[in-house]
Length: 141
View (spheres, rainbow, N blue to C red):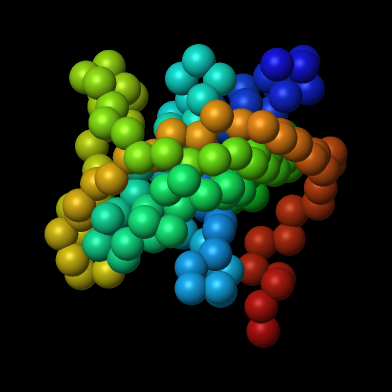
């Protein structure tokens, strides 16, 4: 993997959640997923109850994560990482399950039912915004 791609994948390790994007019934959708990075692959845990994993399995998906939420004081660098590759359903081993940690109790009021996917990134990009000004709560009326 090129150095730039490795740096982008390393940034993913800094946050636990992101969004997977693909199309379902010819419409685009985004779904929240927990991710871990293992040997350059992005492993995802999603809620099976919405069947989003069915649309992702065997399809090219985009996965993105960022640090746009609260940051440590003095950390003025915002970043976003996107990777694209084919998503495949898989069963994680014990070590991979441990990396994911405990899942949520429920999703939209339904008991959380985990399903796991693996993406081997084919295209990876990272974008940074250095010294982005903080304007908490000034983005809404």
